[in-house]
Image 1 (cartoon, helix red, strand yellow):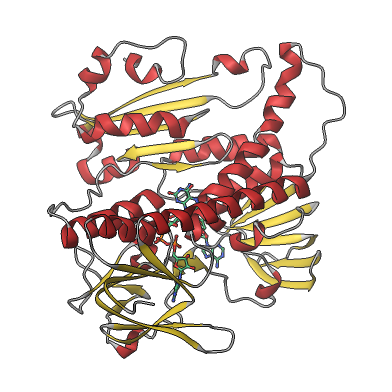
Image 2 (cartoon, helix red, strand yellow):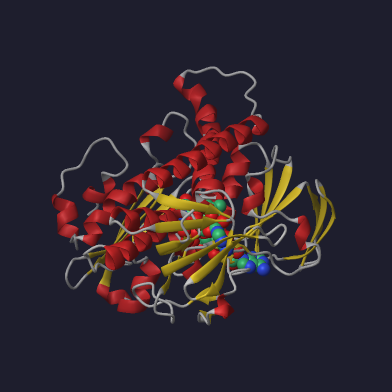
Amino acid sequence: MKSSFDLIVIGAGSGGLAAAKKAASYGASVAIVEGDLVGGTCVIRGCVPKKLLVCGSSLLESFLSATSYGFDFDNIKIKSEVLLANIRKEVQRLNELHENFLNKANVELFKGWGEFRNSNCVEVKDRKNGETLNELYGERILIAVGGRPKRPSIEGASLGWTSDDMFLLKSFPKKITIVGAGYIACEFACILHGLGVEVTQLVRGDRILRGFDFELSSALTEAMKNKGVNISFGEQISSLKGTPGSLIIKTNAGKEFDSNGLLFATGREPFLDGLKLEQVGIEILENKIKVDSEGKTNISNIFAIGDVTDRINLTPVAIDEGRKFADRNYGESDHKVNYNFVPYAVFSQPEIASVGMTEEKAIQSMGKDNIKVYRSIFRPLSKSLPKTGSKCILKLIVDKNNNKVLGCHMIGDNASEIIQMASISLMLGAKKSDFDNTMALHPTIAEEFVTMR
Ligand SMILES: Cc1cc2nc3c(=O)[nH]c(=O)nc-3n(C[C@H](O)[C@H](O)[C@H](O)COP(=O)(O)OP(=O)(O)OC[C@H]3O[C@@H](n4cnc5c(N)ncnc54)[C@H](O)[C@@H]3O)c2cc1C
Ligand SMILES: NC(=O)c1ccc[n+]([C@@H]2O[C@H](COP(=O)([O-])OP(=O)(O)OC[C@H]3O[C@@H](n4cnc5c(N)ncnc54)[C@H](O)[C@@H]3O)[C@@H](O)[C@H]2O)c1
């Protein structure tokens, strides 16, 4: 087996896979090292299985409104063990698919955990017994090891689950407590509620989804509460006791209650353990690998991309960073990643999606008098027969001085699909008049973006 390569990639997740395949397509000899399943967070324990859970869970609302369309359902039941088992099968299929893609791309996969010996040598280790499985030499090394969930340091924290654990459960519990107010907390609160779980969400601050448009996050809070998610603000967990399946939760406000499970959705951190970065003197800043605008670390032949650099922790960003790294170092282009107008979506029910500046951010950076906010709030046609369900809010933030659209935000059905397309217009520098001059497509939700006056 070959042991010398032009490039060694550590981590076969979104960024690492993209970089390895692209570099190999330029003729570089590439090795990729992966300690867990090929596919990384997104495919194995993130975006993909999460979205499949969203698809399953959101059927509840359709079933509930189906009677107003004349359907008659008796005895709707969800067997979460069936859903989880089917998702695991799909993840297994995708894992094999990604291994095949590597093979076809001529990238050599080394299974085991990467550890630096020096700036050109990575040892591949079996972490169970410490055995060295391979010793690889590379002209360049790319660190793409991603991140992993963080738990708060409170008594009994190990009794709680993280998002990684949620995908490994055999079935979902009857009652769950979710700690956090970010993406994972809100997405799982909605998923689990839709799958019949009684959900309590503990939020230490006074709002969910900090950083997203306040009007939209408030609308999501209201929609989640109306559905029956019990969201408690200004409340923090102080201890966790009991046994798996039967937990006693105490909060800083002195409340005590029981729950069959607890999910810590309290953020993620770069996965640096065991890499032995100190062997090569790679600079770490606040627990993340410090890189320049080309992904280069302080060691000239070592690069880092994706969540391990903790910039914008999203799959498309990691993929773009990986591909551009390969283009710059093995191809002919010197393009850099464009971090402007990255679209964001929270796959809550209803969905929130966003591109560009929020109203709060625009006011903060330009002043209230220099922007104009257009909004449309309405009940979508699909909800007119059921007469229930949350309203849609669509917002455009416009620079009054040049009429440019600075931000485009939405809560409602298919928000992520709609904002993905809107992000093209913002990237091209569209003005409000361009939106106005665009013919509407009727009857749709998205047409409101081109008819707001
Ligand atoms: C629950 C959840 C839902 C998410 N949903 C979305 C979403 O809807 N949309 C979105 O854009 N993003 C989403 N994300 C974020 C997205 O998954 C990450 O931003 C993305 O996977 C980062 O890619 P990466 O290549 O940096 O790292 P990863 O995909 O995490 O890959 C890193 C890989 O490196 C491996 N590794 C680590 N250390 C070593 C080592 N020493 N040796 C060998 N291998 C190693 C790991 O096992 C892993 O396979 C979600 C994340 C989570 C947790
Ligand atoms: N749809 C998507 O694109 C998507 C979905 C899931 C995750 N992600 C990515 O993964 C990252 C991690 O997601 P996340 O939801 O874990 O993180 P997050 O940073 O979005 O949210 C973390 C939340 O935990 C809270 N928190 C932190 N420490 C706490 C403590 N000790 N007690 C109580 N609350 C505490 C924070 O206030 C915040 O509300 C995201 O930032 C995002 O980059 C993206």
